[in-house]
Length: 222
Image (tube, rainbow, N blue to C red):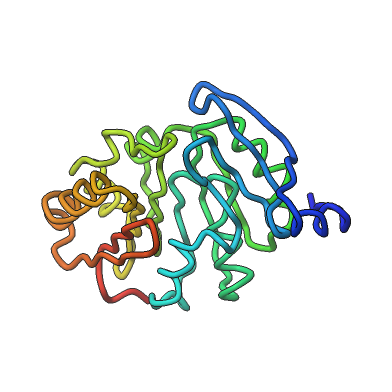
């Protein structure tokens, strides 16, 4: 659903509250219109912000993605990743989106998906369960799983990373989002990268993108 022209105009003056929601996973969700773009936030973090979701946008600019045909998104949010790759990078990709929060699935379906030309298969389920039974391979996997500002424990495990590795095509890449804001964030993200991520992906690289440390499983790409 596209916002009205007057809503868009007002959103450049001050943020427009479009809708609020709550769920077992997020006590408070706010869908805002900010400078003409939908933004999904909690009291602590930004979950989605169309092409202004800078951590992934900055990373996409330095990766070789032109031949990516399939993408799995774990933690779909409002779909910032397909919005960016389609509208800013001109890529034609088939997406599988996994999102545990029914309210976020509802908001994405209502406000974002109809405006995309790309095929998006959005599934409301737990990413851990999905990965346990997944038999497909993907050229690109994006892990963006947070409950507020915390990555749930399983998704920081070797078992999870091994399941991602098994779901990558021959030249596929895993992109993994971590926070890099506070000193605690920085210590935890660096330790995870060096002690866990590189254990599964020895050729991995880390990119500092604003308040995030973005982990990439390999340096070859497409």
